[in-house]
Image (cartoon, one colour):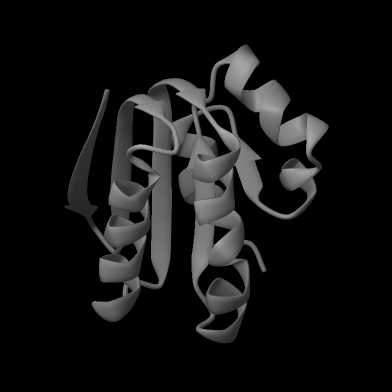
Length: 114
């Protein structure tokens, strides 16, 4: 089960993930990110505080946008992941490709790092 909430906050977009991202619902995450890019959001935070699980399909969604983020100069940061979910990113080396921070404050600061 997954619910996704989007909220604009000052000059950035926050995408809040609640529940589990797996093969059956990763397309929802894909659509939200695609929509954010089509609306020219260039600073995107993903709130992972309520994310309980992410499958390889969910991780694949993030990976599929890495080039787009670079080409469109989009600052993208994930924050608040629990240890289990963070470990999945770490094992696959995605923490080297995607900026991941502990708190929302750290993530907001990271939006402005080059």
